[in-house]
Image (cartoon, rainbow, N blue to C red; front, top):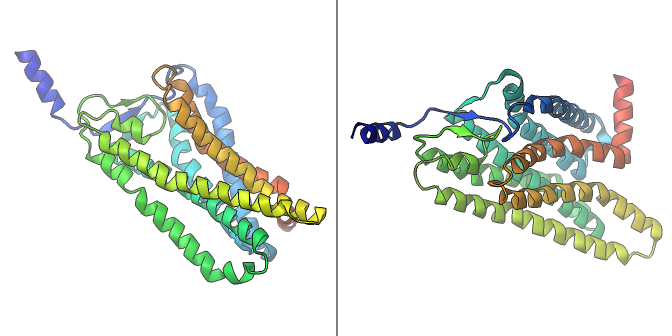
Amino acid sequence: MDTSTSVINNSSFQISQFILMGLPGIHEWQHWLSLPLALLYILALGANLLILITIQHEPCLHEPMYHFLGILTVVDIGLATTIMPKILAIFWFDAKVISLPECFAQIYAIHCFFCMESSIFLCMAMDRYIAICHPLRYPSIVTEAFMVKVTGFMVLRNGLLTIPVPVLAAQRFYCSKNEIDHCLCSNLGVTSLACDDSTVNKFYQLILAWTLVGSDMALVFSSYALILHTVLRLNSAEAMSKALSTCSSHLILILFFYTGIAVLSVTHHAEKKIPLIPALLNVLHNVIPPALNPMVYALRTHKLRQGFQRLLRLG
């Protein structure tokens, strides 16, 4: 009688904090991963800031394509900074405790930046589609007013549609277990600890993935299919080479980004058997693209390389 009463009383309390246990299965030696992760984070911050300053400094880079690249650098910095300081604090200082509001804020930031990145890749694909498939109409379509509208739409769409994710998570009742077998607050990882039904959370996550990221991915690959169709019809080999080179850097990053999403989705189903793999991939997918994106653009974009050289000479 006393035991059952105790269980009922304990389950009536809402917990006030979560404990991020780190990467499942390797808690004892996960701190060894802090060095490569810290280096990736520093690389992401340094490289993206360099690109942002170069685009701002160089008048020849004040073009739509580089405008989207500038937004991408801001999003990459935001995405990496949302998770990496806390992960490094867990690995170095054993700072595993995170309050519920902080956890829900992290969930929102991850979803918002993640969807923003997908939207930027779509904008880049559409920009290249208009430039290659409709070059004469490009100046009249991609105007400064158009860029402002597209940027505003991206921010509003992703900022507003991701708000229900943390709001729904905050509405769940967390009464017993508060240990998250991860080093960041993922929506499904957090809501799986709820004592009440979290079906609506899973449903909205699925709807969000299909309506935002899924539609972006379909439009991105449709754009590149049309670009490839147009390029293959060009008579000049030089024009064909130039058109493909302007798209190659975008395509490399887009393939890496969406392939990562596909791999995460597949490995998520194996989480109960091998929990380390999806957790580690989740972390890497939030820090490798921010570090990789600037390197790909720096290596494959001649104007950007020249801008770097001029900026470093001034420094």
